[in-house]
Structures are given as structure tokens and as C-alpha cells.
Length: 309
Ligand SMILES: Nc1ncnc2c1ncn2[C@@H]1O[C@H](COP(=O)(O)OP(=O)(O)OP(=O)(O)O)[C@@H](O)[C@H]1O
Image 1 (tube, rainbow, N blue to C red):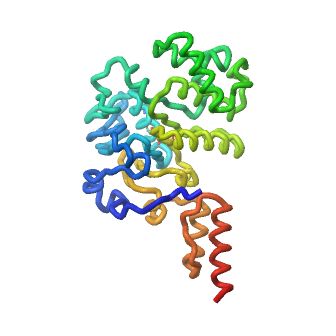
Image 2: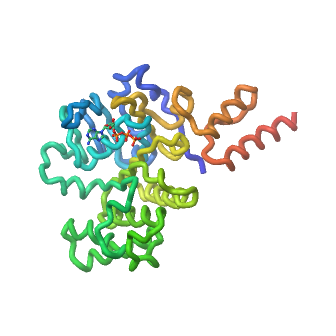
């Protein structure tokens, strides 16, 4: 699968041209380009916790409907704090955040925002409220006031989408990590939100469970949902249309994935580093590889080309 489609020449490290990039903030994915509807617009957004520490500083950005965006950055850079703004759980202390046009500060009751944006947290077990998986998945649509029939239809569809139908009667606290994340995702799917924010959801999962959850996210992307994925894992960035890097509460990079890979100033996935090292030794290979298989294919192509010379 080709994950990186094209290069936006205007995108690059924010430090080089921060102001013009904000002004030119354009959708970077094909899905987003088709709709061009703004999902989130942060305007000079700053936030400080009651203890006075300023965590987010003057953030200006737009995220478009249908985009798959990764928010990356070191520990403590403000990623989770920003995520909590996206569905109105936190509100800017100055500036504003519009969620599908709604100013979160003006909405005292955040349920209007929750209809649009769901969050899946790192530890799904703390999110469970039902005695069974299906009860838990029903909780969101119940709160949104759907009829019993509609709730059942939504729960069945959501559990089927995450392949959890067989586990619907289980106690959520007895699920494995990957199953628990899938159940949490089903809960958000059943609400039918346009946007889903994932906050470091794979950090507690093993390789197989991570693969399962990432496949689910890929399916959401194919359904043209707006996906925001918070991670500090360099390897995760390859799947996104766009990368926003936060550092000490400020945006230090905002652009297409390919520009990020070319920038070379941030941590890169191991495979990308390997391809870059090969390039330095004269190998004609692309650094934009998203899996060992893609890396092997690139190297084989280059070797075949060489052997024909
Ligand atoms: N409730 C709170 N009160 C005061 N400070 C807080 C609170 N929650 C978080 N912080 C501080 O805000 C800063 C940013 O935290 P945040 O969790 O948003 O960062 P992060 O980039 O998601 O980090 P990580 O990758 O480690 O999860 C940290 O220094 C943290 O200690």
C-alpha cells in the first residue's frame, strides 16, 4: 500500500516559515481535499492548568474533515492536553477552538461536541461503565438520546465492525488489552461521531494487538472519518496524511508525512533511517517505506536495476 501520495512543497518545519504555513493551512489528504470542510480550527489557542503552568502556547491550525492526522512530540509536550480540547473536555484559557464550527468555550454543555468527536484513551479499562461489552457500547448512544431500536442497531453494527460480536456478553474488565481497545473503539463508533481521537492507544499493547487496532483505524480512514492519532512513536507516523509536532506546547512542524520524512530533524522510524543511510551510500531507494516488506521491495528493485547495468 502506498501511504504517501504527494509532496506539498509549502509544507516543512514550522520554525522555517511558521506564519505563512498557518495562513496556507490546506488540507493534505485526498479525502480532505474532496470535502474541504474544517473539522477543527484552533485560533491562538493557549492553555494553562489551574496551577499556572502554561501547557499549550498560541496554537493556530486547521484540521480538515476526512484527514488522518498524527500529533507527535516528546513526553510532556502537551499532546494529551490538546486532545482533551478536541472534544471540549478542556477549554482554551485564551484564544479559541472551533469544532465543526462550534466554539467550545461557548458550549457549556459539551454533549453537542461529543456528538461530533469521540476520544479513545490510552487505558480503555478506565472508560468502561457497562457490566457487559454490549451494555458498555450502548452507553454513548443512550446518552445521545437514541431510541432502543436504534441503539441496538448501532451496538450490533459497531461490535461487528471491530469483530467483537462474539465477546458482546463478556465483562469488559476481563478483556485483553487489544480487545479492550477494540471495545472502546466500538463505543465511539456506536455514537456515530464524525471524528475519533486516539490518545496513545497502542502504548500498552503488544505487537499483535497493536496491529489489530491499527487495522481498525485504517478502516475508519477508508470510511472517510476524521482521525486524529496521538503518538510519540516515530513508526506510527508513516500511516498519516499529516503530522503535527508539538514541543513544549508549541507547534514545531505541521505538514505532509513525506515532508516530515525529508526534514530529517525529528526522530524518524528505524526503517526510514535505514533507507536514508542506504541513499547516502548511493542507493537509489525511496525513504518512504511503511513496512519491512516495502523496504525489501525497494531494495530488491534497486538491486535488479543495478544487475542489469
Ligand atoms: N491536571 C494537570 N495539572 C497540572 N499540570 C498538568 C495536568 N495534566 C498534565 N499536566 C502537565 O502538562 C504537561 C503536558 O502534559 P500532557 O499529558 O498533555 O503531555 P503529553 O505530550 O501528552 O505527554 P505524554 O507523551 O507523556 O503522554 C506535563 O508537564 C504535565 O505534567
